[in-house]
Every structure is written in C-alpha cells, then in structure tokens.
Length: 204
Ligand SMILES: Nc1ncnc2c1ncn2[C@@H]1O[C@H](COP(=O)(O)OP(=O)(O)OP(=O)(O)O)[C@@H](O)[C@H]1O
Image (cartoon, rainbow, N blue to C red; front, side):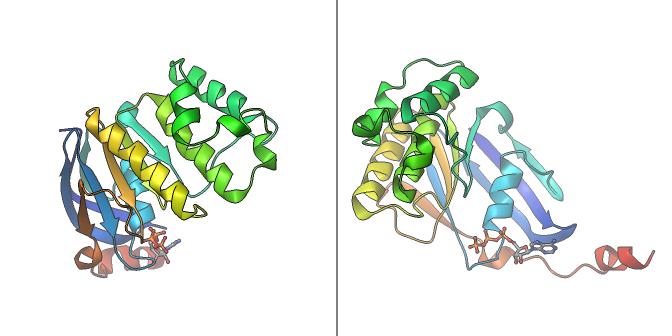
C-alpha cells in the first residue's frame, strides 16, 4: 500500500472535526474526498501530508512519499516558470522539467515571471510542480480552482499518467475530474461527535 489510514480523527483548533476515517491507497489508485464545505477535507489532507498531527488514529506510508498541493500555489513570483520548476526539481533531487512544462501547456510561458501569470496559469504551474517532485503520492486540495475546462482535462490526463506509472493520488474536490479510475470517499458520515472532555478543557 502507498498509504494506509486507520481510525483517523482530525482536528481544527483542538476540536475533532472528523473521526473514524479509514482508507487505503494502493499504487495506481486515486481517491476523491467528497463532502460539504467545512466537513474537514482540507484538515484531513493537511494531516495526511504531515502538516499537523492526527488527533487519533494512524497514517502509514506518508512522509517523504507525499507531494502536497494546497489551496495556494506556493510559487516564487520573481522567478520565471522555468526557474520555479528548476528550483523545485533541485529541492526534490530530480532534473527533468520538460515533461511538466509540456503536460501543463506551459512551454509558451516558460520565461514569464510566475508573478505575472493569470490565476489559472499559476495553478497550472503549481500542479506542474507535482511532476518534478518525483514523489509517488499526490495529495491535492481543490486542484482545479481557477482552471478552465481545457486545463482541467490537462490536469486529469497528468493524474492518469501518474497512476499508470504506479503513483497514487488523494484529491479533495467538488467537481467531476474526469478520472475514471478515481474512487469516491464521502466524508459526510464521519463528522465527529461533540466530545465533552475536549470542550471541558477550557474550564480547567
Ligand atoms: N480554530 C478552529 N476551531 C474549531 N473549528 C475550526 C477552527 N478552524 C476551523 N474550524 C472548522 O473546521 C472545519 C473543517 O474545515 P476544513 O477546511 O477542513 O473543511 P473542508 O471540508 O476542507 O471545507 P471546504 O469544502 O469549504 O474547503 C470547518 O467546519 C471549520 O469551520
């Protein structure tokens, strides 16, 4: 398994928002997290990516295997598109940025400063970064925000190639991505029950 999550509870501000979440992610598989606004998708992804500790439960196989793309694109605005990708390639110890430029249709923008890109172009560059990480587990939070239909299709194709190469993906999204391999995981039933012990903490 690429990733094994068991009985996970995740919290915001010390308050559990979801509990009892278990899933596996095998090589070549994608899991799409669904659920209404505020149900805890972002919190789950941040926890899986190691940005905050689990409230309860276990996550195996994460750590260095994960490439995480958050809401923000995390770009260096004073570097060009190419320089951004080279920077990340260096950080992750890879070299070839050409496939990332090609697959996200960035070749015509290669010398443009990232800060001067449109919102959708910035998002394409942020997603292209995943390819140069060389990491097998893509963890993506609302990856298609700002993308037009053509760019969503580019993204879906890149994810499908990643899966075909034995990678995997965990994606929070409200839209149909056009990735037939993806399984849906509805988080709605895992809303955490109020916990007296946690609420009482403020009065200790
Ligand atoms: N400091 C806090 N204390 C308690 N609850 C919080 C705190 N900060 C945020 N929350 C709540 O935690 C919940 C989970 O938020 P999260 O961002 O994970 O949801 P989401 O499913 O990603 O939502 P969306 O679909 O809107 O992006 C929300 O209901 C939010 O209001």
